[in-house]
Length: 337
Image 1 (cartoon, helix red, strand yellow):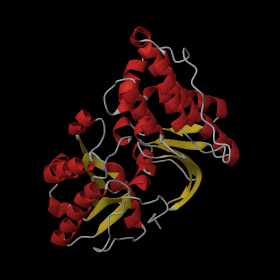
Image 2 (cartoon, rainbow, N blue to C red):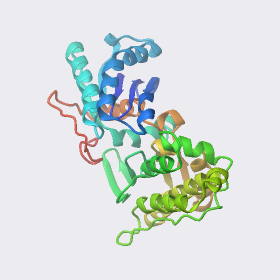
Image 3 (tube, rainbow, N blue to C red):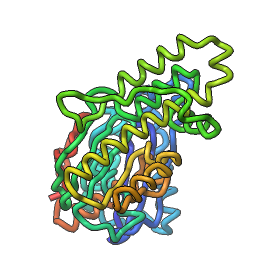
């Protein structure tokens, strides 16, 4: 079965083709226009999606060496994300569904991330823990089976991706912040500055990154301009190290709580090379299997949407044309099954 995946929840316009669960093409266009604003501008994002989606889908089909008439179903993100951006992809999918007389499947963007590791590791087994680390979400899910998820940990304020973006802004770096901090941190000393690991008193498994961002701001203010210039790499490395230590500490706590030894780490932050190095240490210390998707499937992409759609189709799940975009869609809303 050939499924066309479409993703347009934020600032990536993406298409992919899935053949019986295997990705045969994956095209992503990132909107670089937002760099000048230091963050994604929703109205601009939706306009960019609208102007690019037809060419991206055509390129996706070309790379798969197929035509639209070969497509048997369409999987598309309908939440969570930016309303205007979601509408572009969802309405495009509905139009194709009507014109081609084929079904379409609305996919939860976060659920798509849960399936990203299966693209690279199709033999992964249930149950597994999934550390989901994106620009807007930092959560640890117990994935018992398709559509059956238990939330163990979430952030009470900023997500890890937001902490990277806001930290980069304080350090005078470009957007998106994660790759920029990672770049300059490569030659820095991650132990030179001691930033506090945030803790949540009423739920010790939850994340909080707002205080960490504030600690960075105070450190930045107490240093002279010469000290900042000389030590910026060390500051970035220390800040990054604290974020990653926080993520892995909480993951280790949930591993201990559940006893589950299969771990998937997904989302844009999962592309961080230092993160992967430190996860290797956790893997050895806790006798676990830890799976990271390849880098192209960490950030927003349509391949994960296509694979999640394929799982829905196997369960006989389709979406009505009345399906609406939902910018605040939670993971357990509209889950598979």
